[in-house]
Length: 145
Image (tube, rainbow, N blue to C red):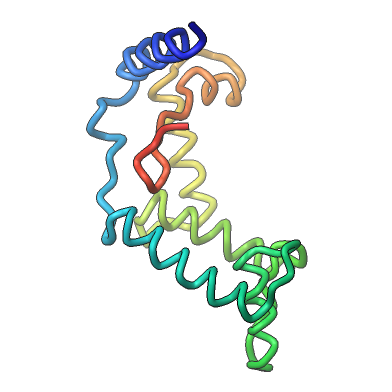
């Protein structure tokens, strides 16, 4: 019974999201199909695990440990993020979301806020606007959260 209720809720969610975006706007073409990505990740993960069989770390941390062999590189561990790395991550995401190179990062954020205000013109707190829009984007394997 739970599965049919979840399915029903999903259908309602899909219908409700049409209020803000069309279904086809949620589809992003990727250069590689997900099975190829999965295969490459599995292959590299196995190689890295064979080299560093510590079960408490993942492939990203394993590759960071290999990075110490190249002294001119920068440590980008998830657990040791510096202000510079955090800023780079935010800027990359903003460039991905708003690819207009003529806008500053601050203006890219303002642009995103203006989109939310157009979609939900009500005078409510910004977080409530985002919650009202919801997040129906797909993950890179095509699934919805």
